[in-house]
Length: 620
Image 1 (cartoon, rainbow, N blue to C red):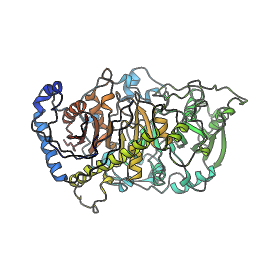
Image 2: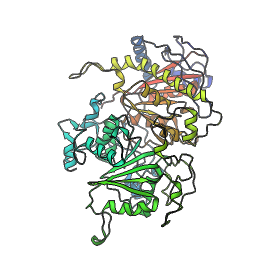
Image 3: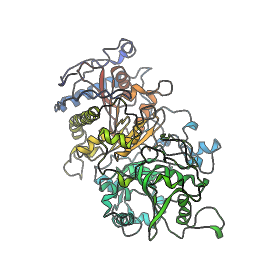
Image 4: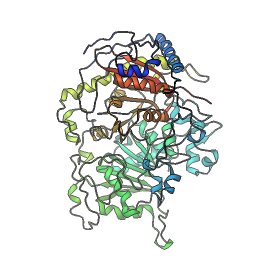
């Protein structure tokens, strides 16, 4: 493989006769310019190739002009019968989230809370159309300003809903004419977010809240506690149920905070056992003792040994539908159940309670009240499996108390062997280190392309300061085939103000435990289904060899591109690396969803190509 690049001009569809015949009428005179470093072949079952030396390309003006010509030519030629642009969806789909059709779930016979969970099996026949933004939608403000000020037209919350949401909300948020301002450090529950975080750290026995490790975050609220944890260089994941209006998850993502829809009333969350150091729930209103306490068992499943469950809730608030004489507080009922699963109530201050999960797996065999059995499922990674009435993870290789772990994120093979149940047979230590270096190089070259384009596409707007470094335009990043999470690692090392949702496809090797043990946000997902998030919630989508490995029997590239368009913000970016034939088809589909697309021929003798796209701001 060559270590240098060459600028060249070539035909998009010139090397595959079968595909060339199918798409011949849209070829035209499309010019391709080599502007990025080649990415490694990162398939599910192959190791990485040798490290590639980047050649930063800066002649962006000609690139941008040619890309515009490419797009206009391709768009004008793509109006044939087979490659006509997808129509625009109606207004009713502006905020629609597939697989969360509560009305349809009720009609299907689901009830008692299960209708709120994710049910793709009841999804109506797919309407293939491009979701357009609401009429008042505006491009989010740059990070970190966008963390505290968002456009009210970008989220589905009305003034009446805002005013009726209680005094805590009014202390946290200020609703102006077309903006919502968040007071990130003021009034979460008690004297402020900082004081609240320090209180939890004190209850755990830490010197300060800067010593918090990776945290789960059930119940987003308006994201202020999560924003504080992010400011401490931590990676909380805000998890909340789907809401048709006034969504907590939508608000958090609009602020550039990690979040996803995560109902678990009847199904497990798509995380392996022993994933989080802390699960935090502030006034989330969950009825923990229903269904034989299986909701609490799900929290226990995702908590690491020695991890903490923090519950902040008024002690005098009754819970459940029991007669008044039998109603007890949420904390009392959780405490009764905690003894059955080897939790201990270690601290209580005001209305905040802290339980710690046992770090001794022998505790379960010595329970005096062993009414809840031990699961026999080993280390399986669930994908919306039904909740189980047993205690999970006790026999896992990852049963390592959080107090005994190294403070450094796992980046070496030895650490991965200790922390993971991932099958690393055949993976050499130098290959893992080389993979890290490759993604460092790839990231630099992504920015060598995107930097001038972002500056050019986003001139100084009225009221803006001089543009900050362009990576502030890209905050929410999704790696759709994350493997080890090394793109995430490269972003951190480069100091980019971005976070990554590391997605592990269900048919890939199980690397999600590694990603979570490194302190990154990650989730398991089947790309034949929609992703559990709201429209327009990611600034950049990245996928390395995802398209090649989609199951053609189950998945449609056409549906995948429509789903990617749904979750991508206007003016957002897509970077795809894959085999030539797949990229050829992807380029045609990009035109159908109206993306500006350019193909990068690496000119290294490989069959690998890069497709870089930008989503336009479609208006009525």
